[in-house]
Length: 242
Image (cartoon, rainbow, N blue to C red; front, side, top):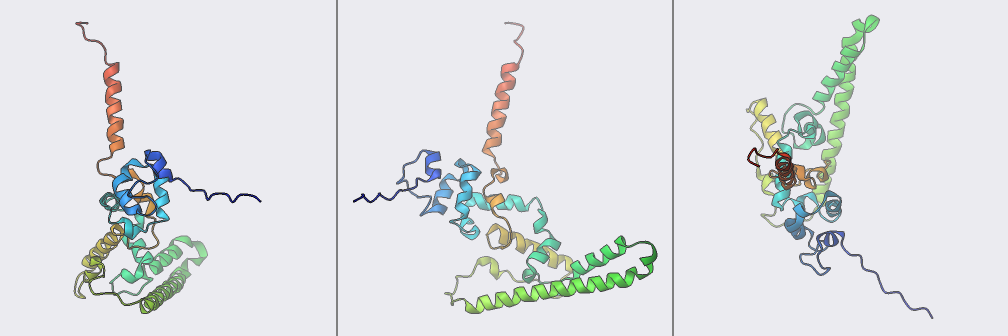
């Protein structure tokens, strides 16, 4: 009769890297947010990426260092958070009154006008209008599907206690009489705030959360500068008095 093998336990790579005991608290597996709060800056990105599978971007937003990284990232005006891309990716957050797909339709018309030459030139205007109309309708239908799905999701959600909504959701949309510039500024601010607090879908949080390049005071850069200063001082020529 063969003996039953004892269950194997997997040692946490993060604990091994830091030289910590298996019973260390906070545990990286059962208390990942608390663990990251203490050790985020001590772990390399390939170990930090493990925490993407056991935490959500919203959960990680309570970690000040990660919020700061996201804030620093938004200050670089990344393409996915710019107006046109954000309106296309998160159309239900856009408070503007123009129908969805207007920007995509204009792009389609411009493509038709710039692409066709020669004998087709007299028909470019009609073709551009036709393609633009098709694109606007496709985008409008996409937005309608998103809104229907969100409405169904809200209807199926259990009721929550008062005061449990995110503070960010309390921000009121701009008034109807506000200028287009004010509306755009409000929308972009809302998109960036939702990104910082982990509330946006369809965006890559990992490339920001686990990259120390977005730290305001990057310890690694400081260390490299220290070594550079040491090398320069060691290579300096001796003084004439020696």
